[in-house]
Image 1 (tube, rainbow, N blue to C red):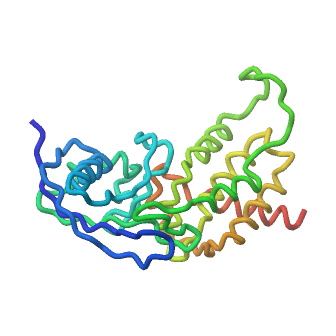
Image 2: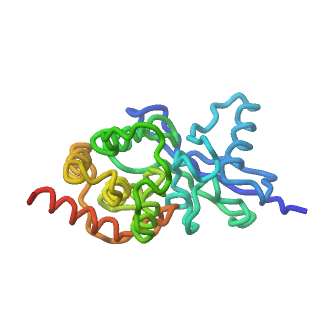
Image 3: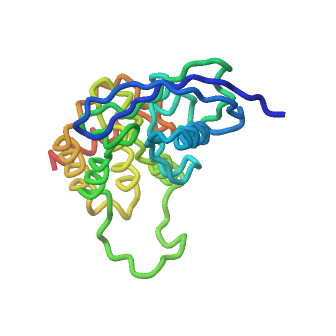
Length: 250
């Protein structure tokens, strides 16, 4: 039989982008240890609605660690600090009965708070629009072996493509740098033959857009890699720096 937990939540509440915001305290009683963190928030919200109070606003979609929308800072760490785990995959058995849990939104100027725990990550979308695509006409669906790709290259490209764009890297970085995100998005296309025609332009345009959005500089502290739920490697930042330098020199 699953254990029940009684917890105390300290949650960031903010009515809108111009509101100063504040921390509010809520009880979370009778929480099944097999629930996910978001399911626990659902239970708390149901109780708030029953009391005629405003529920806590937070983002979610797939709840399977795929979409990246469950952007929560839990006890000071993006996604709660479990290796390779998003907030929606974080189970309540990782917490202790009677524990106090703080829940906050991403803290970065390029990610303004919309309401409570929901932030606007449109900056990431604009970076993708700047160069996260290929424009070569491919016609119909090609055969899987039509363009031979070495396994090592294919594996690296897939590792980079695993980035779900959640923004945990930005939230963890003292400079609010988006380099790990941009490096993953540039690398997964620049590694493949289909992405070669636009390789230089892609690196330039996505880095330039990142700077325009107001993200900070990367000082390679490794905090981004430590909290990334898909364990994107810092090696991709090195590759992005090489691609960008090559684009400027070319």
